[in-house]
Image 1 (cartoon, one colour):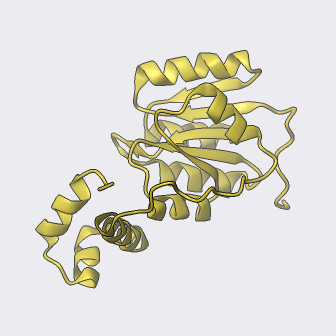
Image 2 (spheres, helix red, strand yellow):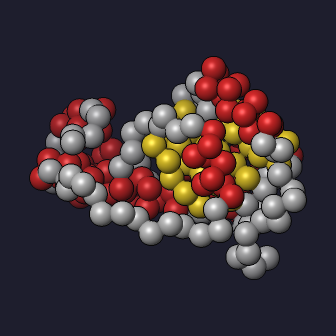
Length: 182
């Protein structure tokens, strides 16, 4: 298949999120916008749903109880290259956004994202040009982003990442467990 956007008349949508109330609200909102929605609460359920019938669209939480939403987007793009997937996360960082896009995500939204933002991301014809940030990243944030990038490049392997960054594994685990600095 070529890299054309999916036909917008086929509105099958997979939503993968382990926040049940959010999943239910978003599902209802997207059904009201004409989507035929399938819900999944885990990486395993998302992968199973894609294996049965790969949807034209997907909204996938990055961090799920049983793993990473990046595995779901990767599987979706393998099974259906024309699908449009949006990654949602409460832990936004540049490295993960780059990885998500490389794996086939069409867009990347920070939580809390409302149904209108998600719908617009799924239906947009192209990526909008990023605006310059009002507040540039701090040195601590740049360091954290670099660590996240190496972590993703190492396949989320803590030991290998620690080796490459020349830091103790436990120190790295503490850094990875914390929220991003501002």
